[in-house]
Length: 425
Image (cartoon, rainbow, N blue to C red; front, top):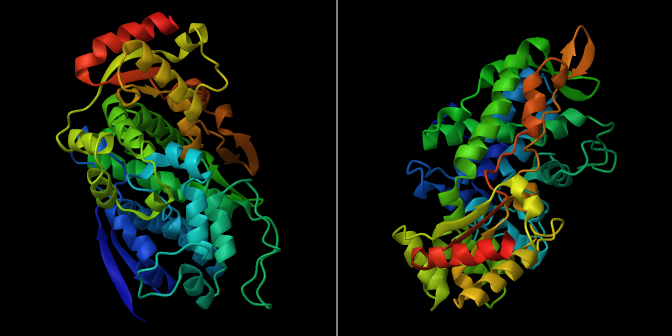
């Protein structure tokens, strides 16, 4: 059988053959070569140049090892490994950077686009390979089941409605399949924490992957961890919280990504086409536009970034004036506040960026505060919190260091800060 071995910086040699080699060669997957895993975080951590394809290969390898350790049936193994390999193919340029803008403009997030790729409702036209659903069906893997695992939703999946052939049906509610892709210990997180830590040099993300995989079991249809794996679970949850605080929500990287999002949002034309662009295609596209989009590309190119000129701690948001706390994270409310500040400062609205990260985190990382790992002890299940006060502490810990932040070009930053302070304090 034809195969290909890829040498990965985290997991070593990773072998692809059969349906997985065919999927790997699809343009929807190969496009991820040109999507930065951490968006513009490389402007703060210069080593963060790894791509979504590297992460997808890593997630596939972790899924393979986890499925092997759990002794899954071949059809289940193929299903989970396909979902792991394909789970990020719907990402827009620079990964999560444009998530809020595109969701607001199109009503779709990257998971919706991924599902359309997997089921064949959307495809890259320039191709010399079959469509993704054609490859999956050829190997008796249901595209609908893979898409359902990737898209997520409820933590239970019914397989009764899905079949590739009349004589092949899945029954029951094997929640562990879903939990391997969407859960507090899923293959996505287990890879990105190790990979992002390695490439940024931030050692907060180091986890004991092998110990975690050894202590995961299936119990009554759920993925659980034996009591001996508690220290490894605690380490993973702490690593996740610290990586968000120190890397994923670093204020300078956050400002750079919001600048790019603002440039995209300023375009008059339909931005649905941006879903299929790569990072360099988007920057080239913006650079050909006159005015603000081109200005932002040049600022990013030479790292002439906006600066933070005002911020409120999360607990200070409660007493802020003129803020609807239920709505402030929505793009329309953010733009309204930006417009009011810019009007008082007599500057273009493009020169004011308001960031309220909690709403976007719900889109990009809904698992962030999940610590609901089930611990198996003497054939009885317990919540992790029964054995670990760390789990309870992490549920209360605020990942973002600010509830609201305002940034602008350095030359007007002091002025914008004073106006914002008078408006909100």
